[in-house]
Every structure is written in C-alpha cells, then in structure tokens.
Image (cartoon, rainbow, N blue to C red; front, side, top):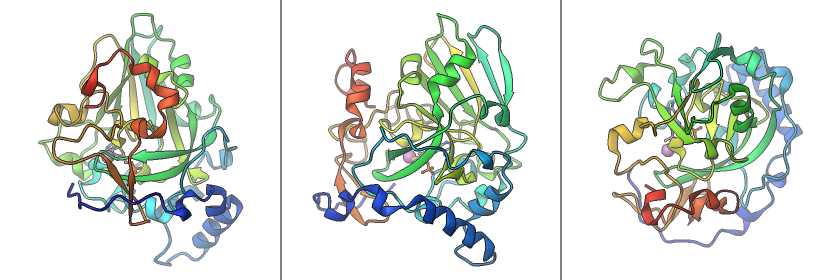
Length: 321
Ligand SMILES: Nc1nc2c(c(=O)[nH]1)N[C@H]1C(S)=C(S)[C@@H](COP(=O)(O)O)O[C@H]1N2
Ligand SMILES: [Mo]
C-alpha cells in the first residue's frame, strides 16, 4: 500500500490508441494455443492449462459488446494474471501461483434470503441460462493502481431475474468460499472470513454491474476469481468480489469484509472519486499497470454517465468512503 509521489502526466499518445490495435483476438487465441503446446516454458500461464479442460470452453470467445469502450490500451494478459489481490491466498500481489490451489468444480451457488424460493444452482447450469458477452472494462484499485481487462460474463440483472426477489429486498450480500484447507490465507484468523461484499438492488440492476465468468477470451483464470466474480468498474476494486458462492437478498445494509476491518477507509459505497483521498493517501492519480505512468483518476472511474444518477441523494464524501 506504499504510494510513490509522482508527477501527473497527461495520458501519453500510445495509451489513447484504440484497443483493437493492441490486441487482435485471433492472434491472442492462437498465441494461447501455441504457449500451451510448448508446455514447460516458463512463460506458460497457469490459466492456460486450466482452460484446456474447462467444461465451459465451448462458450468462448463470446461476442464483444461494442458499447463498452476504453480510453486506453488493454493490459496484457501476462501482466494482469501475475498482479492480483486475492487475500484468500495471501496478501501480496504474486498470489497467482498459490491461487492454483483453488478447486473450481463442483461449484454450487446458493441464492437465498428475500426471494420467492431459495435455491442452489451449479455454476455450469447457471452459465448456460444467461447470455455471455465480452466487455472491455477499466479497473481502479483503492491502492491507486489501475488496469483494463476484456472480461466475459453476463449482466448481474439476469441473475436478479432468476432469483425472483421479493419487493422488500433492498440489498444483495455476496460471499466468497470459505475453505482454509484449500486457501491458506484463510488461516489468518484476524481477517473476518469469508470475504463479503454488497450492493443495493438498484446498483445490481445497473447495466454496468457484470458477473464475470471469463477473461481474455476464455474461462477466467483462478487468480481472477474463477469461476464467478463481479466487475463494478465505477467502484474501487475491492467491491468486485471473487469466487462467489452465495447471493443473499436482504433488507438491512450488510457489512462488507473490508468495512468490518476498517469502516472509515473502506465504506459501503466506495465509488471512485479523485477528490476524496483515502485517509492514508491521495486518489487523484493512478498508476496504470505495465505503462509505468500515472494518469489522473476520473470520478466514477469515467462511468458517471451510467451511474451518477443513482447517488444524487447522497451528500459529499458519503458516497465515496
Ligand atoms: N474474494 C476476494 N475478492 C476480491 C479480493 C480478495 O482479496 N478476495 N480483492 C479485491 C481487490 S482489492 C481487487 S483490486 C480486485 C482484484 O482483482 P484482480 O486480481 O482480478 O485484478 O479483486 C477484489 N475481489
Ligand atoms: Mo483493490
């Protein structure tokens, strides 16, 4: 969480290049196949071996939804896959090796609380009940670094529809698996496991709220929070909970994992805003992974048009920490 004080640069020319120039999808898929063939090569990504035997492989690559555009290049897969936050496997950034211990099948998801009828659904059934698409999203961690990712997944509103919530449901509380034998980070008893995150019903039904099943044109690598994680690009990254096993529809505002640890630093809303510093560092700029550059941070991470109206009733800092 150490932040270096750097000069604010303008967005360099090469970052404004359309992402299509950065990543030709066909080439990428071909490269992935070649890398998998040359097994043993140190450059082989752990995600690739996994993807070969994945039961949902036939669903990839999903069609890209062109409505979701980036203002900067895509972060290369080998950078994204080796710089992650996934505290269940440790509190450093190089957890991709440990994260390979995550067992992603069978994967049962419980939908309960204020719904017509609680139920459990296997991930492989769920993924075939929804419409998968690819979206290019920005991601802004509260630690002031950022990246861009080609996620594959489905709109969270589809899951809400399947759940059939009752009219008194106001929030959705989500939970990550809890298995300290598999995930050694969960042996650290001072953390309030399991990881919990929450949204209002209105936020969950916003078009931008995206449940992720894949990345880079194939099923999600374990370190990305396979087989099902959230992507909320207008909020700080910690809201985008990984490896979800439970969605509970509730009436009272739940407390998240990070809020339990430090409520003044990681509040319920956690909407990106450069004007409101984290109590221990500025949020005015962000380090763009791989580029070595800092760029100005945008309010709602640049997604204000789609989300700002949801927060018109909240005053000042409240909506941001
Ligand atoms: N279950 C769980 N979900 C999590 C985290 C975590 O430690 N555990 N870290 C969060 C944080 S702080 C960030 S920035 C993103 C990181 O996602 P990435 O590793 O795919 O970049 O996941 C979020 N979701
Ligand atoms: Mo984060």
